[in-house]
Amino acid sequence: FAPLQVADLDSYFEEAYAWYFIHVDAEDLRVRWATVRPRVASLLRAASSSLAVLPEIPAWEVDRINECLDKDIWYLRLLAKLLRGADALPAEAVPGTLPARAEVNGKVSGKK
Figure 1 (cartoon, rainbow, N blue to C red):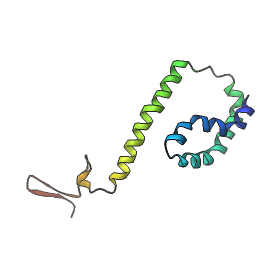
Figure 2: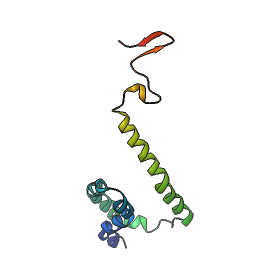
Figure 3: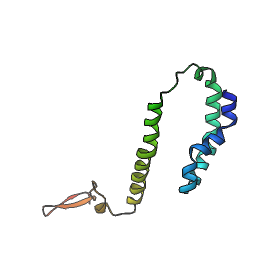
Figure 4: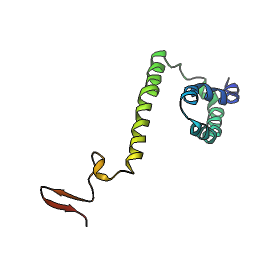
């Protein structure tokens, strides 16, 4: 079973990320996959005997994982994108940050 998994890693990857390739420019995912694929294959070969004795994951847990991947990961990526864009903004424009010198109640504080 494990040799078949290693042989079909690319098709599993394409199936798992098909939505991203259709609806989003996800070429960076293919580049990342090319980087980690040898490691994944090596891990599967090394752990093949151990994996056979692991219990099956219940369907409700798989559903929870899929929900996390569909909703939470998307939201976290959106936040990361906003934060990357915030690097180009002045500190005053980013909530939760203060400039090095701030005027509070008419007094200047911070480093010169």
